[in-house]
Length: 184
Image 1 (cartoon, rainbow, N blue to C red):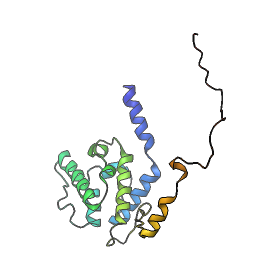
Image 2 (image 1 turned 90 degrees about the vertical axis):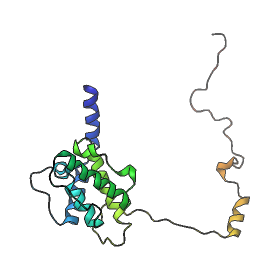
Image 3 (image 1 turned 45 degrees about the horizontal axis):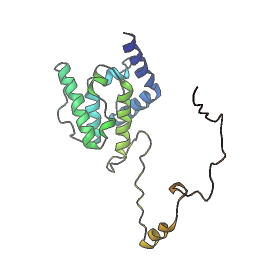
Image 4 (image 1 turned 60 degrees about the horizontal axis):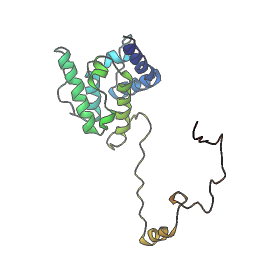
């Protein structure tokens, strides 16, 4: 029982209330409506309806049918549909939370990380005008070298390629040296 408690404490320790608040504010800005007062962040997101509406705002008709009733399996279907739409939108698979992380509230920090990953993916879609969440991902810096520039680099031996211009570590002894005593 204590191992389970330790694992829960470790997962809860990863959670950052400021990131949760920032993610919530971004979702509210995109959807144009506030979360209900007195309802916890994870509880409002739990049924997946908010997430489906969010991805439909970013990429229209990503989730054609949002279940608003029908029990827990229909609500978990909302979450699964959102996850599928996320991947199609460009969020890497490793950034997408597992359904139980949200439904059973096992790892809300991972859910928030997924929202941030979605915010980063939105930068890659020029049709989306903002607001954005998180830092802008770096663009590729493609470089084209001429054949002459590439050939010029063949004659240079880098310091990590085995040559260090005569410097050695001979005579360096940090701490006590190792003594091998035979017969004792």
